[in-house]
Image (cartoon, rainbow, N blue to C red; front, side, top):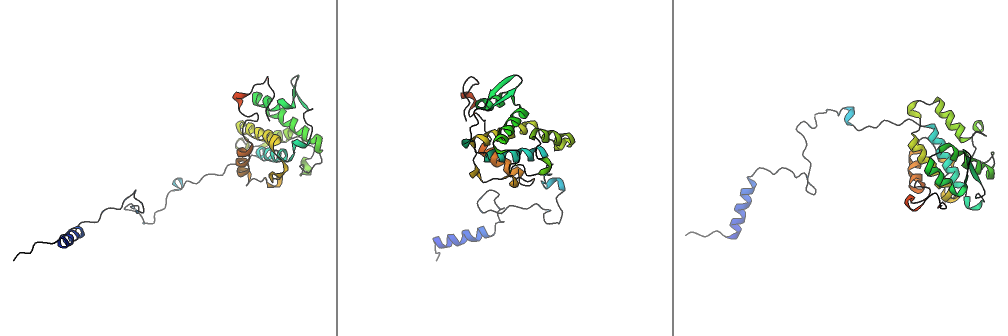
Length: 225
């Protein structure tokens, strides 16, 4: 008597057939799948240095360190408590009022005149012997003189790119106009090791156009702070 196969018999037969098949290769895109290793993996061979992705350390630029410290001083200046609007910058026979300094810089990118003016303004209220002059050997030296001295002896790779120099001055201007002592950053925080992190932080907080959106502003109107 022949007994027809049941559904259970069909299931067992299917499982036996699948057990005889070679294993499927592991998925390289499925969730939880293992990644197939190359045939020569695990032979102890080391990757060549150029494949390790090791980045060379960028040489320190002394000028950038000085600009970062100047930015910290600007943050802590607390412009809101001082009457700075009566001051002006003399430049090539022209008088640039304080309210136009940001416009002037965005138009000319005149780094040294702007830095010199800002330093003169802060010294006027704080004095040359303020806490921001921490090194006796550079006391009384202007920031522009220090920058010139750095670049006079620096190797080419130690000199700051002018584009980044301009960006630092923009940060300094914004830090002066928008900063306050509660920012919790002092010059002793600025070190060669912390410089990249500080630049990124200040760029995020103060690194935009000192006048706001350029397309909305013109030199004929008042600057926006």
